[in-house]
Each structure stands twice: as C-alpha cells, then as structure tokens.
Image (cartoon, rainbow, N blue to C red; front, side, top):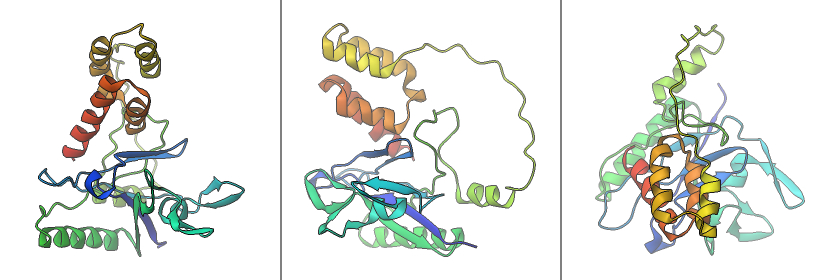
Length: 235
C-alpha cells in the first residue's frame, strides 16, 4: 500500500501571524483553517489526504509536486515557504503529514489530539476529509470519515449501484461573483446582497466564500468570514 500524503492548514490565529482562514489552489482544490484564537473555542483544521501528491504545479519557470508546493520551502529563498501567511514568508500555511497508510494517519491524528489536550485545549481529533475539486459544488458532502475513505478504497473495483433519480428542487439562481460586482459598483446594497447570499449559502464552496471575503465590500467580507467561521466551528 502506498504512503498517504496529507496536509492540514495551520489554525487561524492572527495574534501569532496565522491569518489565513482559507486557501484555494485554482482548478485543483480548496482548504479551510480551524480556529486557535485565544479565549475562543479551539477547532482543529481538517486534514486532507492528497490523491495526487506529485501532481505538477507551475512555480515560475519550474514545476514541483503538489505536496511539496503546499508544504515546502523555496530552495532559492530558504526562509520562504511556497505557500505562506500574508506578509510572513517564514510562516507556513500547511502542516505536512506523511503516513504508511490510512490507519497510521488516524493514529497520528489521535496523538495530535492528545498533545492538544496536554496543552490545555479540547481533545478534539481533526476530521480527515475526502478531496474535492475546487469546481465541484456542495451537492455532495465534503466531510468523510476515515471509515468511508477506507471503504472507498476497498470498493474501488466494485460496480456502484445506480442511485434513484430525484426531481431537482427549484433553486433561486444567484451569481455570487456578479453580486459582489454589483455591490462594489453601488447598484445593489450590501444589505440586499447579504439577503441573497443567505438564500444560497449552502451551495457555496470554501473557495467561493474566500472569493467573497477577498473581493467583496466590508459588509460582504464580514458575511463571508462569519460563514467560514460557522462552518469551521460545526466540524
């Protein structure tokens, strides 16, 4: 059995420079951070096993593997991580986890929770998640237990049973990027935009929320950050 290469975002804690609440690798996947802000509930970041840790990522004129890109340092600048905290090149965004198999990874997660408890934090094992492409929508739950991941590996050669067709429920079509643009241009109020976002928030991916937080007005940014925090706390 091949090794498992996984990554985990460093928990959000701006007091120590960890300001990233989410990270999206365009066209590949998106991630979100837990919470480690002082005097608030500690929520560990989800752990994401990489299906293609060697997938080539272009960095300038070179190409490197996905796992190395997310967790490694630039050899031309030893104190700089490829993916680092805002204005903190020496602070990584991801932790690297390498295990012989999923069982060993699960043991490592439990040990991590025990160390967290020894440091005075809740003994909450980080969830191990299945990997989704950034372009997928929230029709399929992102969270997967270790047992589900292992079962998927055992049943990979089995023919899946067809799922019964269900009539699609009518949904209100809202283009969140257009909504951000209209608020920025002043043709839509922030209050009205938040109301529209509330009707589609269950269909928004982590990368969608990150887009709103980075490009929206102050009201939309606060709305997106609050939704990201709510999802992280609900793990």
